[in-house]
Length: 216
Image (cartoon, rainbow, N blue to C red; front, side, top):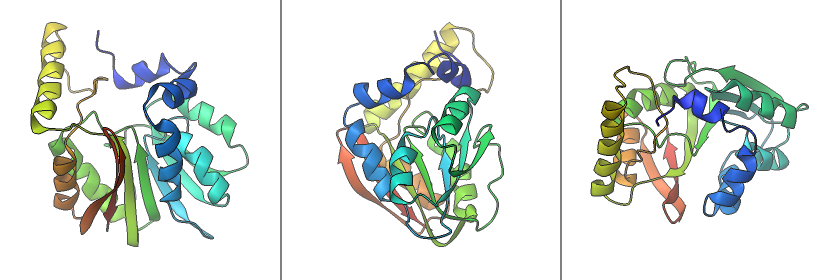
């Protein structure tokens, strides 16, 4: 049965970190790698979309302990777990959807998202990325580490299965339900460029997980 996005993660908060680090292929590599891609220095301001319990931040704060991080997540239990991890860090945690919340203009040196954005269509992502683009300072960038479809056929199959399940369960609202519908890297890159980013490049990959860097 499909679950609403926030309910899905609320129901899985116990053991979430262990599951992510042990059950997702190469998580022990891509979380620290992502952290290493973020800026280091004084007064660095980072936006984390779908921050969850802050798995990438565990590595990032070791590299840059004075960073200021704004984290957005749909799930209150995730944010509470994140608060407990980093009681001495400069965190601004916001409960809500990153599709709905304002990000501001030219505030952040970088933005990051890990294993969060593979649930949405290209059309849904373009306005989100346009808003993100405006929130970055000049020379800012976005680091996206996520799960991607390896072909257009796979991408189409994931989306059609979600629509089939929603119809089967009589779901006709516009809320987000938890079901993986990853784009291809090519379609993700197109969304970033159409949103205003000047360029986007693949930095690394581990099977179906890729890290993309999009430049303002």
